[in-house]
Image 1 (cartoon, rainbow, N blue to C red):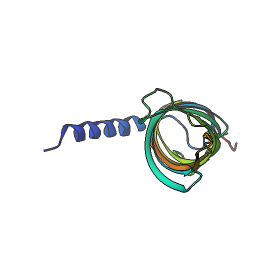
Image 2: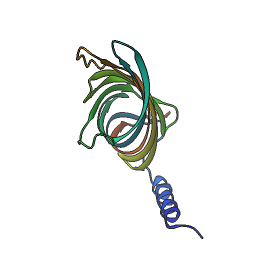
Image 3: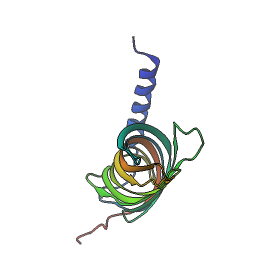
Length: 195
């Protein structure tokens, strides 16, 4: 017998498939602008080094965070801001990522998006870079839903000088998955008629 969660999942997938049949974006159309809202779940593996006057020790830590990304794109160049909340802090907003990227279309509905940017969090600012793979599910003209998976590397330096010890973060590797909704505009291909 099929469980309730599997039934719901099958209904959602079937619904997206049916709606995709009615997508009106013509072949060869190029996106000129989009506004995207993503729900992101991120898993990070951090490496910290603690230096004291007597010794040095390195530790690994796994963190989970989730949040929302707002992204604007003009002619495949993207500017995004991600507002994240780390599960271990319980203090609301704990991290802000600002990313500048470029969308390279692999197929009509699949694109690779490399990016660079900066991260600001409760510990300190840092540099970040990575890439995301986005899969659009076209529902209607000018609107689509999608899925994405990403990988990023961030470096953050922590300076907690209190004469006795100093903590330094070497950075962290993060993987993310999520869903998004996107409103966009596109330029239709020119139709050439030979009379």
